[in-house]
Image (tube, rainbow, N blue to C red; front, side, top):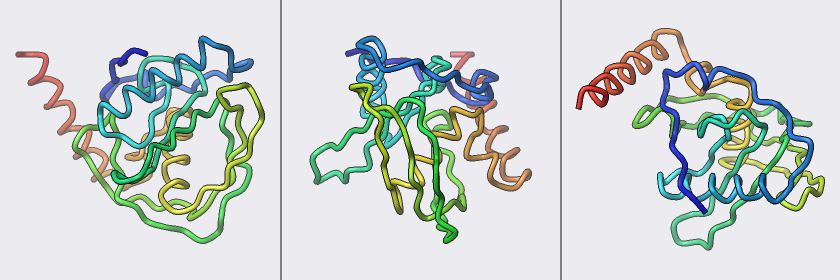
Length: 172
């Protein structure tokens, strides 16, 4: 396994739509493993392939608590096939928008259809935090960031801070 480099917003690569995969082969399963290692190293609970520069419809999630055994899930071509009408608000962050958070309203539960790491079709019913993470990561596959769900004023403030942070990092 290898730790991958995270793309930090604002970056045009994060606004592109990822291509579907034809199936999960050993190379793609390896990508899922590398993404999980990268996510865990960054203390994340979800990661989408575009965040590591791969424009393919692949995400990984693990919402297990700190005192629980890891419960990693790799999903290829994930698609929301049902969303609850009841909404939840979570204070979301993102590995591609470090140290930036905002409340985002999303459906409380979703059913997602996907291919697992063994190329088998699966359905996953997620609610609460898992539903939020699944929707957040699937958004990445469509070039949508969590800041696209908040007010223009808040979004511009966050992106301005990230531009400044990246500029300072580039100067050192």
